[in-house]
Length: 592
Image 1 (cartoon, rainbow, N blue to C red):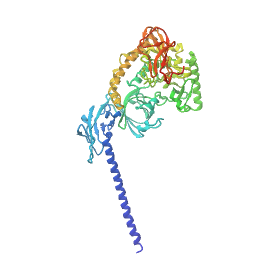
Image 2 (cartoon, one colour):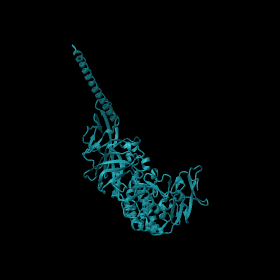
Image 3 (cartoon, rainbow, N blue to C red):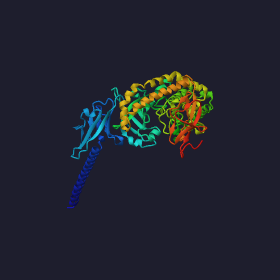
Image 4 (spheres, one colour):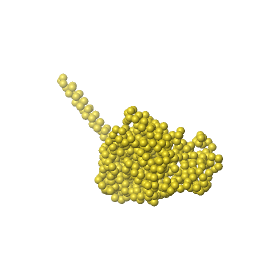
């Protein structure tokens, strides 16, 4: 009798425990079921789970387009053996035909418009029929990343660009060759583009150096968004022109369609990163090797790997974390060179390699690069060599006179000397290149390089940008434009504009550098317009009739120093300076 009480209650406790355990599992199953139903309902109302899968297992998914422009699927080149991806528990109908998961896509993946209908297998309400568009690339390699840690949204939301995404990168070559596969880490890249653009650029670090798409093996790469370049080929023009000029360490590049976790992010230019180790240089990084950049944006990190000269902020890219002594050694050498440059002394070429600086000057001058002496201007020193070399070439999406948010040059930028018009002195926008132009020997070298190496290449471009460039990216451009809600027809128009612009620019440079024709100077004093860093110094043939004038908000006209107005259609016969007339109450132009 003494043991019956514990046994009795022990049995009761065992029954209660078992019941609680059963109830727990029932609750888990109910919760799982509710989440499953919820996820199915979410998929039914948001069909992003629907997509297409290749025979090799890579998937792309349906995406909603910006501005309520419907939905689309973007297929990479060489996406073979395509089947339909149908979320579990849902019935997917395309063009009225049901496609269970894994069913060969057939006509459902044909480029053009299709209808989509999704039903819940549990008998839920049918989702109203919608339309979607299938786009297919034709000629561009695909770079597909499967995230293992991090997300695109988190990375894009970080203004400091410190949030990363790591995963597995697969490159599907357009020629049907074996895919390349490597672990990678992505992070944000760029300054203004990163802050303002809806399509971002990214730095890509591979787990090992690889020769991606036939380019030289590197670890560090950049996916350039080309977001401000409607032709998508300005960087290619600059890089190929740099090679024509013999510029060393010019980055290699290839176009790719970028996908992350099945989402199409657009057409990108995959290129070597400007880096002493792992990037463009791929050197051992010996003592005494420096990679530096004139970088306006580097001022934000002043004191963490850079220094000020009398004119500019210099970011030290290599060594990566210079000590105080190293930083002072670099700064002293740069300041010595700058002192000679600002004094317009020929002996500045005891510190600078004249040919590389002349080539860099010419490249920026010929194509009217907006960022010259402002940012993305690299220079370097190699082991055992006392000279600084200009380059490598980088960031040429702001060219050809069409990307100034403040001032419309009216086509006059094609007939100007761009770099000499940069403001200097107290305005400190100008750096070394404007001052180098004042050295006669340097000017002669620029003119020689133009005549011997660049004029002919510009003539080829003006006659017609390589058709292979255009055909290769045409379909991907349409995908990219649809992805970001932009007009697809602007691409071909921009190609034609680029050809015409280069032709007109070459004719002007030939007359100035090669033929030495007589010119008069018409200088538009534009530096005060929204802190514009240039005066527009136009070199015109005497008797030129002005077709247009520069235009800007709150600028109502232009006058000579004596107040005489300058108008479109006027004939220019002698050199002069003209000044803007501001609307009453204009916020700028109040100081001399």
